[in-house]
Image 1 (cartoon, one colour):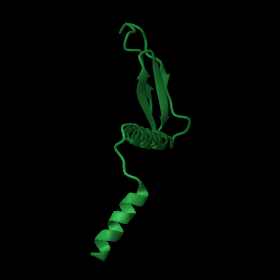
Image 2 (image 1 turned 180 degrees about the vertical axis):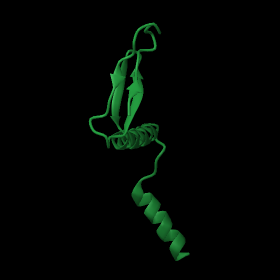
Image 3 (image 1 turned 60 degrees about the vertical axis):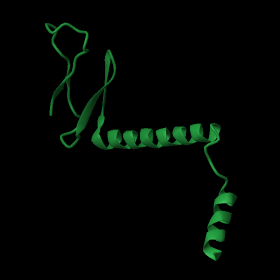
Image 4 (image 1 turned 90 degrees about the vertical axis):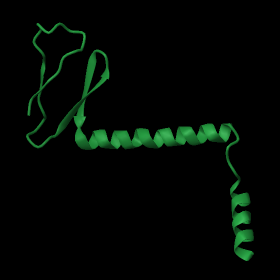
Length: 87
């Protein structure tokens, strides 16, 4: 597997550097993380990174809701559930 990579701002007349996997079994994924650099990682690592980013986003949204007062205390929720169960 060979992948060509070049900066979006580099002239097309320049020869692009060639990226090669470390072994024949590596699956590589190239992502454009910044304008002038390329990040190369195996597919599993990329997927794990995306899952981590998704979890961090969920945590950030939860923290924002807590700061805005959009939450209920666990004791209140359980008390409400107990009242509904006993009725």
